[in-house]
Length: 383
Image 1 (spheres, rainbow, N blue to C red):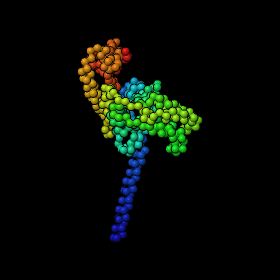
Image 2: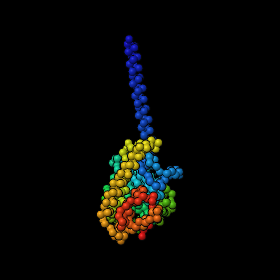
Image 3: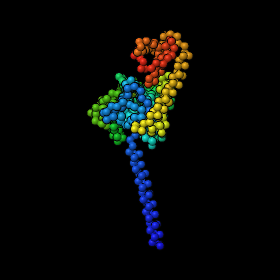
Image 4: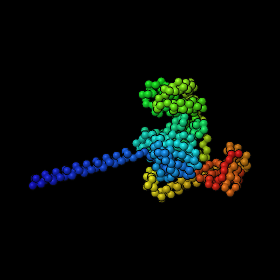
């Protein structure tokens, strides 16, 4: 009898161990699966000609498409909105080329976007205290802690500017060679150490302000980056003398004049972009992903964005109508520009484009304020 009881006890114990082992194995597999899941962003809206380049292969952007680290985004006459898993949203504007270099995870880390040229708008939301969001241009780094801001890079001059709509942004010169040098290399090399000191000249750009590097400093930073790009990774020996000379010239200027800040004019276009950069809930984001794409979710997302767009455009139209501008001179004086928009039917509108979305222009002319679909426009010229 006792032998049977012992046998039952042993079997119960063995069963418990087996169950526990199975649970631990399943948990480990789940953790491994989560750990191995690549960091990514999701496209939540796209309009016009937008391409995603991955491993040299180019594909058209689409809602629900996954964007991974190192993906290149290239826009022509189109825009694309992306969202991180932690709730930060980015709009890549027309005629832009940028790379999603790093993406933060739910436990923190850094999201970093390297912009070659063009423009972007970001609405940053931190999920944790150790999460960072940075935009790097050929000459500057903009670091964000939670804000709405835009970055522009001139494709010809390669100059950079940052406009803060709300919140704060830290802006500093970008010395590219430091990104491939180790802390030990920087500490031991006097030239690298001086460059690190230069890059630490960070200035906080406040809400409704804009910042740009001092033009003379920016030219020299670009010169340093071009010189060091010719040297082996993390090394400057072949160009040391030239680099040291340029860095010394930069350091001779007062540190407080490295970044120039001024009051920013927040335009109707800034407001339109900010309000239509829709952030979707995490569960909606999950449904949007790749093969799990849900047509009803995509349709709902488009309708939500369209509703927000209509609301903000209506406010802008009502506000512009109150100005009561009677002729072209008054319009040019009020908006500091005058344009001639030629439509496909041959008719022309002379006035000012006061706001635009991915597919709509809002034009203020002596005849009033009206919307025009971009697809109906043949040309747009400044007078």
